[in-house]
Image (tube, rainbow, N blue to C red; front, side, top):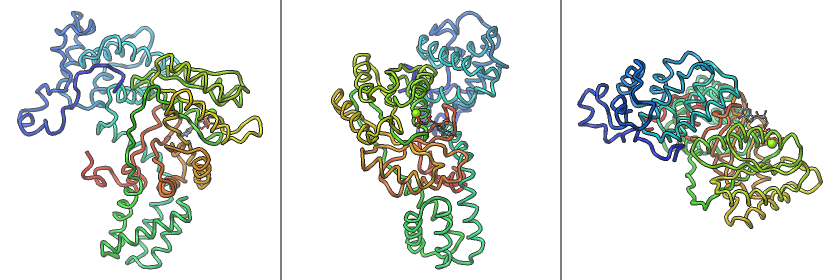
Length: 465
Ligand SMILES: Nc1nc2c(ncn2[C@@H]2O[C@H](COP(=O)(O)OP(=O)(O)OP(=O)(O)O)[C@@H](O)[C@H]2O)c(=O)[nH]1
Ligand SMILES: [Mg+2]
């Protein structure tokens, strides 16, 4: 579900493309799924497409109708007529309104989406297309439920590839040198590989295991040719990262408990997840159960406002479990879809952090059976091997359902992801690739393996749709 309760079907399924429709000149034929403008001007779905016949409407309608059904292409056409955004100029909003009308989104919801975006632009003081295009595309992808669209996935892949550049230097650069210096895969080769993996923060145990698994793979494939090694490694990594998607039915509100040591990115990750949920059309409550510092509560409140989520807090120093208790009352009474509970990475008193988390969990469960539905452990990739001990600690003490790995951008220690995936059977669900809202993205193990090895998506996933 996206932000909009109704929308014209956008992308026709692939099977439907062939062979009959593709035999016609597709570019000139309104496909099922392509925006129906300008015919929609007569449909009366919204005043935006009514009688005020500015020439740009016909041009934009033609461009949309004739273009490939891809979000980035459509956005390109919408933004083509926008120089910059300012109070006196409604061009961006008019053109977006036109797109939404063409997609038959309910008018009030389209207006709400734009009002949200407008507020964000003002808060960020952005005027130029280059400043906000990426965020707008991200919001549209979520709102139109198009995050899985190929175009959007390629965009994410680029971001992953950029974010992993330093880790890749550590791993691939050295593996390239290893391959170049060995005429065949022999015992020395495996030894050196182990060293490279350890240096790249994969860790000692996982590096040994991974090397063992690769040996088996090479043996099965009956090869000792270094040229075949990259493929073996890619396949092995893709296997390691292949985690089944958990689909659990939840009686709303879904309760998400954020845990992790201080400074890893819990609060900003809540903001990013709340932003996603809002763009997916959910009613979101954020609870400030990190009462350690007043500044932490304020920081969370600012984020809540910015992403359009409601907020529940008590004063600094209050019992975090009491905050959770009250927030659940608010959430249950207010018909919320999702509640995020922020927690502290450290505490005022000597009360054990884990005991405190247990207490919060008990309260949540008592108020809403089944809650917390997701205990998300946030770990910071730049801390390398520490991330492993934190995962072990939190998992053993209070249970972890998912891992979000932050700060992968710019770190050379991204190899830690391999270790985390190998050592714990806990799915990594999101990765943080920067400080912007759109920099938290769903983790795709297959793509991650490719980005880590510097292999393109086309090349590495010929069957990827
Ligand atoms: N580069 C980068 N920075 C990030 C990422 N995620 C979080 N940060 C930054 O990390 C810093 C700490 O983030 P917080 O969200 O305050 O961390 P926290 O876990 O809530 O910290 P405490 O409340 O002190 O326990 C902030 O400056 C964030 O902007 C990421 O994926 N990439
Ligand atoms: Mg925090």
